[in-house]
Image 1: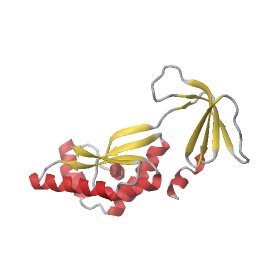
Image 2: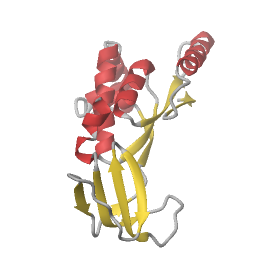
Image 3: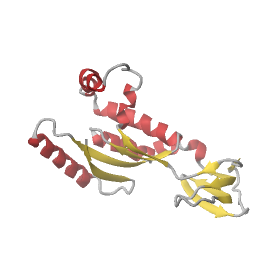
Image 4: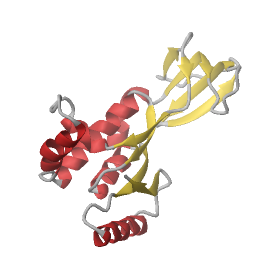
Length: 193
């Protein structure tokens, strides 16, 4: 339901007269392509045989480019709630004196809503896949599933408190992998940080 709301303006429409950039990196884009979007699924068609459904919105995308989604390869998705709150610090002061004490107070709901907001912002600006390195991963995954974005998530390994801390984080990653085996938009990796 939330995913549909995020794409309300995109449901059931067609685009014509645009350039399609192939992910293969070919130099010559295909011209005069048509794209039909129906409940967030895409159908491409070459030529000029656009079949319009009753009530369907048509966008003339002449001079526009349609390309594969962008990929954010390093993010801490829920940290969007800290945006523009703490400027002018060195990295270590920012982390030790400001960010980590605030993160200690975050709840699962904080993580979920901040992630949801970030995913919607990313989708609206063309990002369709994210690699995330944060904690409370279950809450991030919940927001991911509701927005429909593709997520590669990690269990960050920093080993700050010694070997036992590192082993505990590996066990947490294994538990996450065991819990989420049913979603092809979700993958896991080890986030050595």
